[in-house]
Length: 288
Image (cartoon, rainbow, N blue to C red; front, side, top):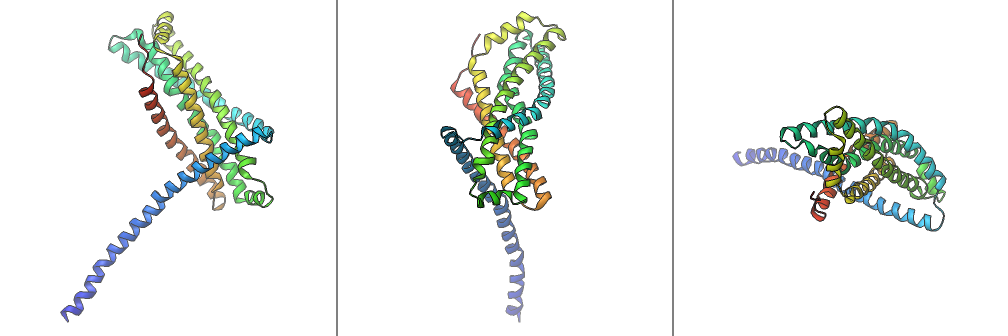
């Protein structure tokens, strides 16, 4: 009797462990494995899109009409929000840098710190984040709506490649607009920092521009534009992938838009840190 009653108790004690193991395995599959699966799918899409863009341009089959249409849409969607964000970012950086520089007796170097901070970090991040919020969400919503209406499947049945017809022009348009927006933010942010430093914080124009010219170098702008290209490509690929994998009707479209923006933002910050670290290691800072 004792042995007979002990066996069921042992089995009962093992049941929660089995459930916990199955729960952990399920969580691992749904989060870790799914995350790597998504990353691999997006990398494959990136390779396919780049190949399609280069091949279609070479063969003169690239849909330039759709490309121009997307550029116009993205520009009108992102320029005003980018301007409204670039101005306070430039002012905030100028105010904070000037205050800290004044506390340590280095107020004359506020121009260099403000300008370099905006060009190296502020401009590409602001432009890419606005692209992710305004343009990336629009791409995900458009492709997601097409997916749930079976338009993507219909295109495949008719022999039309969705990558070539829909994603390639949006991909190239996002890169072009992101590139231009980054240069725009560099100019607006630097001008805003100059105005706040000179007219509101008692700085002198000559000191601001001379210190910036002493420490800045062309490589700073080049790296900022490289960041813009890479980050814009990330926004386009992530948004397109989430749109094409939409499931569940209208609620699925909303979920795809949300996940596209969140995933893009996380990747943008990670890539920004990576490129900044590589730039710091390979290109030494200019000494005045």
